[in-house]
Image 1 (cartoon, rainbow, N blue to C red):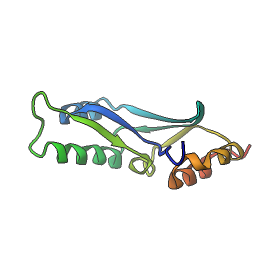
Image 2 (image 1 turned 135 degrees about the vertical axis):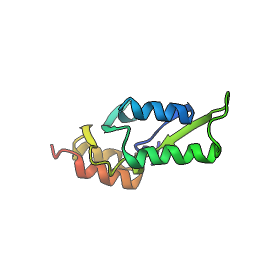
Image 3 (image 1 turned 45 degrees about the horizontal axis):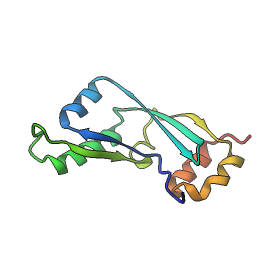
Length: 123
């Protein structure tokens, strides 16, 4: 796998109703990444992070400009690192040390790799 890890994920069958419920629940997101079965990182941030919610809301607005439609869903509401990387409450739960992370540089999109190198431990 080359250049694929982007700190992202998706929600299937998403609706405005589900978005509002997720905001109210004050969820924390845990995002992890693996390359060939090797855990590379685990990041945590509050679901309510403005840029993260804005990204999901924008996708819902494109799919449902007039609000939810019974029986219809946004099949894949997706996100990547750019949607939460500036969240003030972002926590690095785990990241490979820099020396190991370098081995996976070709498997991680450039901007996200640069972020991981900034937060990765030295040993």
